[in-house]
Structures are given as C-alpha cells and as structure tokens.
Length: 462
Image (cartoon, rainbow, N blue to C red; front, side, top):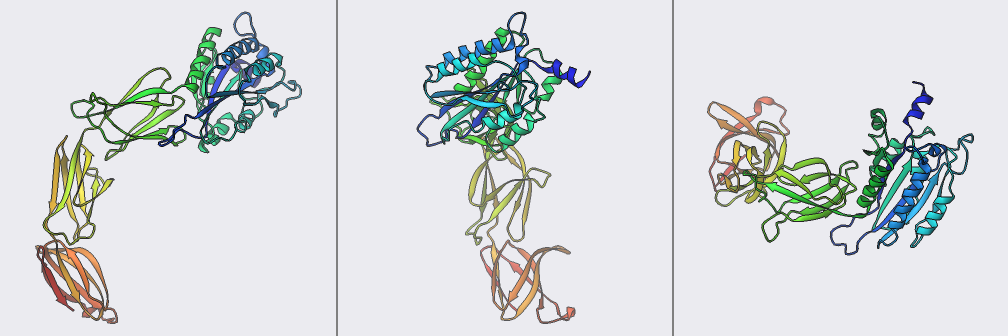
C-alpha cells in the first residue's frame, strides 16, 4: 500500500482526552479544585468525509459536541474553552501552524462556543502535535485547578509532527496526562500508532461516539471510589495503618498519599480518587508492595487486593548497651538486597517470610532465615557488649581480628594518632596487630591478644 493510500485508510474519527494537571488536591487543602476543559477541535478538510451513511464527520462532531457543551452549562466549578485547528487555510496551503484559541475560558461562554462551532468549516490539514503544544498555554495560571484537554480529530498527524513525543515530553514535565483515544473502525495498525499516546477505545457508530464522549467527560468531571484491601495470610482484609501512595503510572508523579484505615465496622475505608489517571499503587510495608497501571473507571467502584500479611521484628541488646546507635541491615533471604535498616531497641512490622539480618556491631553478627510470622513478634537479641580501651601516646597503624579456633577474621582498622581510643565490641577473643606510623620496618609489627566480656572494659596500654 502506498503512503498516501495508507494515510487515507488510517484517517477516521478519534477522540483523545488529555488531562493537564497543574495541581491535585492535597492533604490540608480545604477548597475543591477548579476544573477546566479545553475542547481542541479538528476542522481539517477530511472532516467533510462521511461518518456512516448520511452525515459528515464534521456535522456529527459539531452536533455531539454542541449537546455536550449544553449539558456542561449548569455544572458548578467548571469552565470550558474551544481551540480549533485546520480551519483558516486550505489543504493547498498546507499550513502546519493553523490553530487558534477561538473561545477562551470564562464563565457562561457556552452559547459563544456553540455559535463559533456552527461557523467553522473544514478546509485545512491535520496538525495534532503543534496544536497540543499550543493548547498547554490556554489555561489560566491556577495552583488549584484540574485542566483537561479533549481533542476531537479524524486522522493521524499530517505535518511531520510527533504527537507521541509531544505528549511524552509534556507529561514528564507534569503538564499533560496520558490521553484516552477513541477510534472509529480503526485497525490494529492504527491502534499501535497511538499506544505511546494513550488509552484506546473504539466507536463504530454515531451512538457509540456519543456514549464514549460522555464517558470521557464524566471521567474529567467526577471522582470515583476505590477500596484497598490489605489481606492477611487467611485472605482477610485486616491489615491496616500503612501508608499508601497513588502514583501516575505514566509520569511517575505522586498524586496522593494516605495512611490506610479501617471504618467503624472493621472494613477498609473507601477513598475518592481521580479517574483520569492510571495508577501505580505502592503499599509502604517492609518490603513495599506494588500494583502497576491500576485503572479506576468513573462511576464504578474499584477494589484492589494486596497480599500483605505482617508480623513484627524486635531487635534488642542484652543489658546496658554501649552502642550509640546500633543498627541492622535486613535482607531478602539468600540475596544482598537490603529491604530495610532497623535500629536496635525498636519493633517494626514486616511482610511475613524469612529474612537474613546483618547486625552492624563489632564484629558484625549475621543471622539467616529469621522467620516473621503473621501477627506475631520475633525477638532477636544479641549479648551486651564490652569494650576495649586502647591507651597510648604514640601514633600507630593497626587492625583488630576476632579469634575463631585456629583462624581469625578481620574486624576493623585502627588509626591511632597519639590519643587513646574506646571501642564497644561483642564478647569474644581478639588480637590487636600494630605498627608504629614512623617505623618503616615491617618486622616491628606486634600483636596483643585480649578478651572482651559483656559489660566490662578491657584496658590495653600500648
């Protein structure tokens, strides 16, 4: 098939909904965000083609959009506007900057929008990418506003622009959201071209087009509901008091954060959430749980289940600790993937399972396959440390090794600059290896064995 033939084959009526998020209502805000909808309307020459047996695409689009504008007139907290492209020049002119904000945002401008729609005649080319770039500047600056762009067009880009690149660049900057796409009689090749732009819906008749437009506008105007179930090992949604993050699945922007709660009847609370996003939902357990690209259709309650059984790990030091801030690294078993760093003398919840633990004492203590059980507390205790007091007025390089039978393991480096040093250590047998900093003879290195007992100080004069 020729390129021209392919373009002709691919040109159908589609509707794309872009959401421009300047601000999302956050914790502590008391006012509802203003909603603004910009209709970006294709008036290129191909809109004269038939949709179905009788009416042209332009006539159908004008009729349905006019009715939609009427239905929006009485909605509080909503302003609308109209931008058009492909209507000021002919196809022979091939003007790829033919786009204009015909009716700007203001209260009670619905009749003005319908009047201007009726005057527009299709004549030019399809310039989606440039029109989207310009549409981003049509919204008044407002820190508490939900700004939606709905693009109605009958074809793919004809001006060598890249709507995908424009969409992605603006979304990464937090300007535009990934759109919804509604195509009429489109094949799989067309669908693939818009995978990078947004969600795809197909409408093959005027009735389906009308219904789809209503769905998209509904999502732009209304919040919807979601429940997040944090299930225990019995599959019951009884886990709670965990932070949850709702992230725009495309841009990675955090949209909302909540601390999971249960209602008075003991069921997880219902949240009201914006349906124009697909969400990555992150449950900040240890380790975190994630579900990607969760859709929340407008007007339909969504329930999302996580397997989130938890138990507690308590870390303690016997007796009076000589450690200032002893911590432990918590690993996924059999790996070096750290899932958490926990301080001693604390208790923290973990997803059930087994963990490897590295205690950052001197020497380090390793505990493998420590079980965390649903609603139980696992207590891990290490002995009370003792300490070694290195007393000197001379400068030394050195190391401490732990003696284990016939072998030894390195514990730490020692750098003495003529001052004594006090080191908290686990009970055990050790050897200190030293050499004076000004002594260049390796054979003058010396060893000093010593024992550390819990709660006691071992003094070594060097």
